[in-house]
Length: 420
Image (cartoon, rainbow, N blue to C red; front, side, top):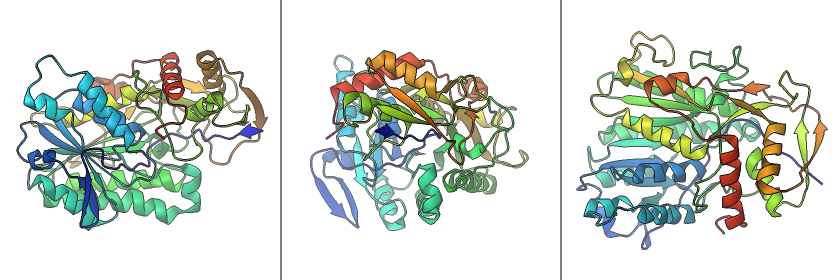
C-alpha cells in the first residue's frame, strides 16, 4: 500500500482545551476554574494570549514564552486539531526548568490559562479577552487557522470564515479592550509560484489557493488597520515555511488529528507502525530541482517558536523595528503604519527525497517510494530568504535537518499513539 502526502507550507489549524484544575462554562466559553484567573489582571508579568496554543506550533510557542518567565500566557482554541495534554506537558517542562528558589512570579509563569472558544464568535472572543480587563492584555499571537491547501479548494467559504473573519473579529475585540500588539502567523503560500528563489519578502503576493489567499487577505486587512491607526497598532506578520521536529524532551510534538497531511509526520507514523503502508507516493520527479522532486524550506519548530518570541518582543515600546529602513509591509511603504512582514525559514531547501533519506537515517525504517504524476498546484521550490528577519529581528533557524528528524523520532517513539 502507499502513503500520500502534502508538501505545501504549514500554518496551523488548532484548538485547545483547559488543562488546569477544573472546567466551567460561561457565555459559551470553557475556561480553567483556578485562582490564576483572578491574577491575570494583577500579575507583574506581561499577559499574552496565544490563539491555537495547544496545537503543534502553538504549544512550542507557549513554551518559548513561558521559559523566559517574563510572560503570563493564556491560550484560546476550539479542539479542531489539537489535544489538551500538550499544554499539560508544556507546564511540566516549564516547572522542570524553574531556577532554584523560584519567586512567586516565576511559579505563576509556568501556569497556562486555557480557554475553549470559537474565534468566529465575537461574543466568545470578547468573553475571554474581557477577563484581562481594559489594557490588561499586553499582546496577542494569532496562530489558529485552517491550513490544508487541498481542502481549502473544496470548502473555500469555511476557510475564509475561519481564517479571515476570525482575524477581523479578534482585532476588533482587541481594540475594544485596549490591546494593539499582534503577531500574526502567515505562510509562505502567500507567494504562489515565486519568480525568485530564495524568496524575499518583497516578492509579489500571489497565492494559488483559498488557504493562501486567506493569509494574503488577513495580512492586507491588518496592514490597513495599522495604516489607519499609525499611533496605536503594531503588527508583525510571520511568513513561515515548513516547521518540523519536536521539543528535545519528547514531551510535545506534532500530532494531527487523523492521518497526517504533511511529509515528516507521515513518515514518522509509517516508521512507528501507526500507518501500515511502507511505500510513499512522490508527486512528480521532473521538477527543476536537484533531484526532480519538490523542494521546501524546513525549520525546527523550536526555532520557529523562538521567532514568534522575537516578533512579540519587537512590539514593545521603544522598539526600532518599525523604523528600520529595510522593513517590508504590504503595499506602498509611505503611510504603511506599524505593520511589517518577515520570512521565517533556514534559507536552504530540501527535497522530498532529502527528507526521506534523513528519516531513514533517524528511524532505521526502510521506506520505499513510488513516483506518480505531478499534483495540481504544487510549486517546485519554496525556499525562504530569511536575511531580513536576521537583520531586523535577530532571528536565525539554527537547527539542521538531522536535528529535526532526530527530535521528531524521539517524540514519536516516546509517544507512539501521540497524546492519546
